[in-house]
Amino acid sequence: MSDKEVLVVVSKLKNYIKDAAGMNTSGNVPARLTEIVQTLCNEAIENARKDGRKTVMDRDFQAPYSAQEAA
View (tube, rainbow, N blue to C red):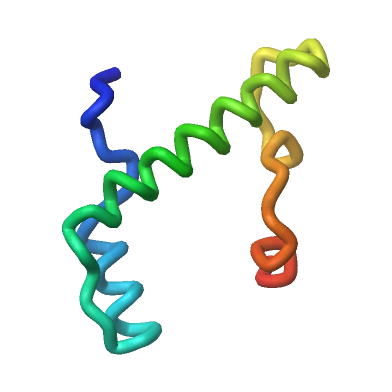
């Protein structure tokens, strides 16, 4: 995978922010969110490995407290 590949759907991200807060989205946001998603995925991959699994599951992601409240 290319280091520059964006892992979020930019149009949906922009629409979400516009609908949720009436704000615009900077052009740098998708790249930053991609970095965050990659970090979370790498941690989840390691958690699955520690459990001896080859499948990453939702429980492998350790969400911040505020994200857990939203679920």
